[in-house]
Length: 458
Image 1 (cartoon, rainbow, N blue to C red):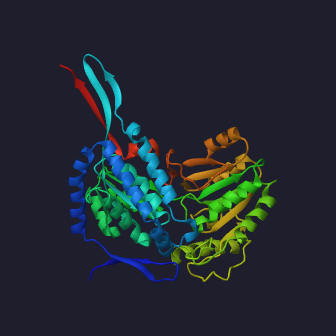
Image 2: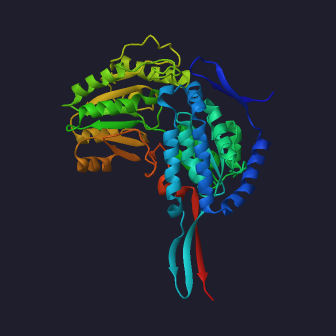
Image 3: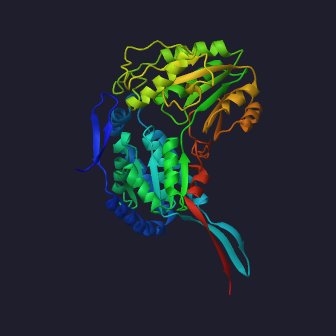
């Protein structure tokens, strides 16, 4: 019997999509086709590759009316938010706009005796393993620059969002990207690991959990394959004594609750100056109480179900453990909370770093708020985590923010904003969040390798 991948919809627990898993033999054949096609693709002028990639992006945009309800069915995001095409297009457009300069040769010398320069050349076949929480935007982070740089791409998407990779590959093929150059494969974990162990790829970009990242890194051990890993976060915010409390509360609670808290760079813990604490907590609770939990297909729903019951149960467990240890829950259980994927959002105070909800990634609509006395106290607590993706600082003093930012172990420092990926800046992390960097000029550096030319003239 053919094994399949199933997307179980969080809306009603039904099987929304199902696809057969490709065999190891067929997967190897697909990679071989990609390797063969990549050479001709890389030989095309850069401007031609850019144009085709952007046509593929636009074709995805033409599908958006169908994509938005598909996303609601697959992972629970309310239709009122309109999908991901805005960020999807922004990221691709930016990477296209810098490609000529980012991929240009570095001229070292050109004199009577020698011409010396360094080129950026593609790795060959890039494996992109994308997550379900922002399935289009996370995928395009790798797909667009990898293709523009001259690589072929194999996309393995998350089971929860089975239809995303299929749609993307179809869109790019529709506009003329050769079908072997960009392939979406339905792979199981064993076949993926086998391909990596067999040195099938020139580079691997993975976004997902820490355990899965370790599995990929272990599979690649000894192959010398480059691996870029973005493994989530436990992202902190610090509200300083001169912060605009209204703006801080509105933005940070949106950063904690949007997408049902299922954001790698979502705000999971907030530290507030003692003098601002009570006012901030009052506003935070009011904001969360205004959210409407419900069916994501209904226009007035602002908080949909979590993508899977097991994700919701982990948030429930962390929250209950904290309450049992003395934390205060400020949001009463909602009638729509069914004990399954539909989960009451929660604001916790009286939390400590002895509680998992302040240490482990929650990846759901719960946030802990702690009082701090000074900047040093806040920095110590922000750094008390095995993860380091982003951190958000709220102050009117940019120099103070930069000074504190220098002390935080994180990939990105925000001031007076959060939960946003600027494609002009490198998306990166530290500690167990992983290594590497996506987007920006550095993204192109990671998706290519340097090749030096030392040419002696006759």
